[in-house]
Each structure stands twice: as structure tokens, then as C-alpha cells.
Image (cartoon, rainbow, N blue to C red):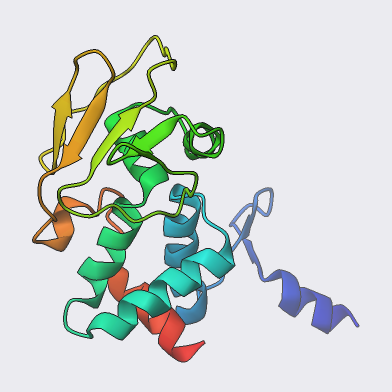
Length: 181
């Protein structure tokens, strides 16, 4: 029994035996790829079901630009755009604005936070929504209009993956995770 416990703990004794160091176990490839996936999933505040469905949908388009298509589909979700522009402070705040029907897409009320915006879409606030303290952030893919009711237009899609990978996620690990496990 003593041998088993000593193997589990993996103590490393120093010369004077006063300090005990515990070695970190080497992470498995599964743990590394899971950590990358979780980092991206929690950054966009998505459930596992929505995240994996979005990944599988982007995989069906093409294998060559799958990473870019997946990041674009995350970035151009309506709730993600509201956070990136600065209308909402968090994803939950953005989802609340959307579900309370305060957001217009092409002058139509949109109450789906998972709505994927396209090039040319104009996203604006309703007239009766008065939000103070907008922290408006400039974005090279969006054209902002700060007139009476705040709105922005989507100009173009990103061409390279590094432009919208603000977390510096290794996308290859996420692809491996969904292919293997």
C-alpha cells in the first residue's frame, strides 16, 4: 500500500528534505487540444452543442479554409459583432439586447443571437433604445455610423485567419480534437 501511494504522489525531495515539490504531469495531446477548444468556446460564451454544430457546419464547406470559415462564423454572429463593436459589454448583455428585440438587421427586428451577418448587412439599434457609455471600437471589417441611431455596416470578410484570431488559438488542435475524439 505504501508503494502505490508513493507512486501516485510523485514527490521530489530536495537536499534538505524540508521542501517537497510535486511534479506536474505531462499533458496528453487530448488535454492540450481540449484546452484550446475550451478557451475558444468560453471566449465566445457558447454551449458545447452550438460550438460543435458550428464547427461541423464550417467543415462541410471546405477543408482547405475550414479554420478561416469557422472563425468567420464565430466572429460574424450577431452577438459577437455587438460585443466587438462595443454596443454590449459582454456576450450575455448582447444576447439580452437581441432577445428583448432592441437590435435591427437591415431594418428588421432580429431576435436570434446566432444570426450570422453577411456582407452588406446593416445592424442598428431601435429608436427608443438609449445607451450611454458606448465604448465604440473601430474595426476594419465594419463601417460605423454614429448618427441618430447607432448603426454599422459589414464591409468585407477577413481574408486571413490571423486578423480575427484575437485569442491566438491554435486552430489545428481544435480540428484534431473534433476529428479524433
